[in-house]
Amino acid sequence: MEEEPNLVVSGLSKAVTLDGVRFRIEIYSLEHDPDWILEVVDPNGTSIVWDEPFETDRQAFDTAVATILEEGAAAFMRGDDNVVPFPKGPRRQ
Image (cartoon, rainbow, N blue to C red; front, side, top):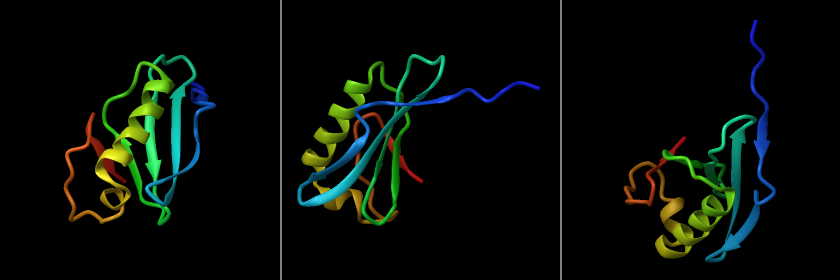
């Protein structure tokens, strides 16, 4: 039986307040995978995960901050009826 790979959480994962709203930026990868996954969680617990991984955790963090500032915090919190063309294609979970 194979063991599950360990999840590595980036030191850049943190809560941030942008556009007056507090978000959790979560950046993680699998133990032996060089790519990083980006997830942004709004105050209501809605999770947005980018479809494409990032080469570095810094790229993921910078993308999250830039996207929130460019699109506005409200774009992350409008629910599933809102379609916003985010960079690298995030999806709601």
